[in-house]
Length: 304
Length: 304
Image (cartoon, rainbow over all chains, first blue to last red; front, top):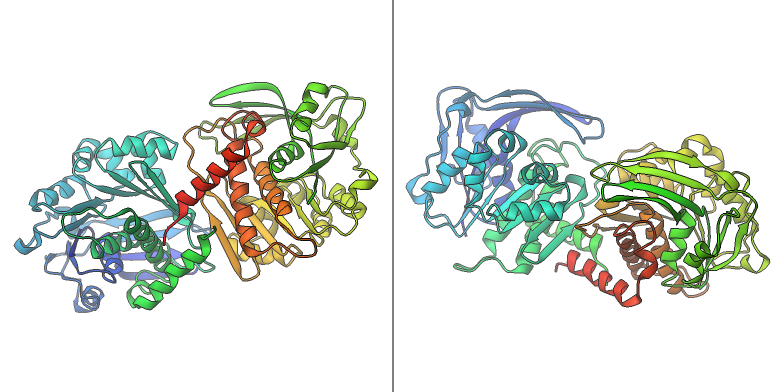
């Protein structure tokens, strides 16, 4: 089934211990949609400036992603610049220039409104709500958020959360949102806010899925060379939602086996994302490479 | 097969957010041997003072642990006191009184010397070597260490490591010992120092086994109530070594399936250890409870 994502499309500059890149296509919707495109047909809703040229659109077009919902307006594209610490565990933002994103008001093309799977990328919860209101009976809505919205727009975020089925955030966000350090307690508190399911991303400590009566955990695949962690979480969400969208039957929620495999495919796409700068690795994958890495997760974790 | 452990036997005082205990039996050899006692026959080598009374010995005796190697000398037993942070992630040592441990020189009873499985608890590497030299052709030697010895007695520690088959340490110790932040690189560097196998304990992020051509990772079991993390790492090592010792055939190293299951049984015993103060939970288990928790790890991690 088709999958719609709304989020940021940006130019990024990153410095990591392995090198630096001055300008490359990034943004949460970009990583998400490229990762998801290996599993299902993806539609992207966002905004870019007139400096976003044909070559930059290629990131979407070469992956068959529909960009009809990607508005192009006069001005400069959202720009983010950041620097990672030597151990890659800390990230310092050097610059955030919202540019055309500052006045972004997502408007869904009419034929997008019945898309069955929706992912609300990490943007202002008011914009997330605006998208929710334009959708017609989506089958599954997932979303992301961050500390900035949890602290700054709590009420609006809670409104968005009431209509989200799966929240996909990291552990520090889950702790901040719930006020609970213990992740079982945090998950219970967050699920009481709306989402039936919570996926907690834990970086190089793996990921955990919480839903009624079930917890599923997977460790991260140990990687010897991590180039650039940018976009890993969005790529995880793209793999997770892409796999779910491609394995669901209309009218039914995903079955437990499919959900667990979706967490693995999310982890697979996150692991590819960090192996090169920006989208370099993620955009040039093949389905057999993805399946091979899925098997690596099986080999990493299996016991009887 | 029988399993010998050398390490500290102590009185501990701990404060955690869930409460405090002024004096209870602790020490690395104690946690290790109680955890291992559910799997195999255990012999403990250590030293206690004359304040270590019959009731304290019960911790060992009720679990069928042989204490012939537990010397009792005039003076006070090793005392450690510590306090955990609100999120249990940080521990501050309030007092370390070595007492009779300061002049400890491990002497193995003659009939201990042919014990096939040996665990060198986290003590001075010179004492670890002294024990190694008294053993006669052990089948498998495992060991632990800590930052204090890595920084303070590097040469002696490297000598010990040359004759260790499995090193069981936590992630920060692995990074300090190897000088590598990346755990794959750290494991390679440490395995070049001697140990064929490395188990990295990662607390509430699980555990990872590294050996030639293989990495096995298991997440931690999410627990809602953690009372006291003291001894979790030693309990992990006890479950790991106890299971290995009970499932090995003379002359053969453990097979890959047994090794992976040993990591799970280690995780099982570590998860029990933290559920109450000190040894309270660990000493009152049954084999069915252990098997039930093993199945919980299967349910937590399985996917197809």
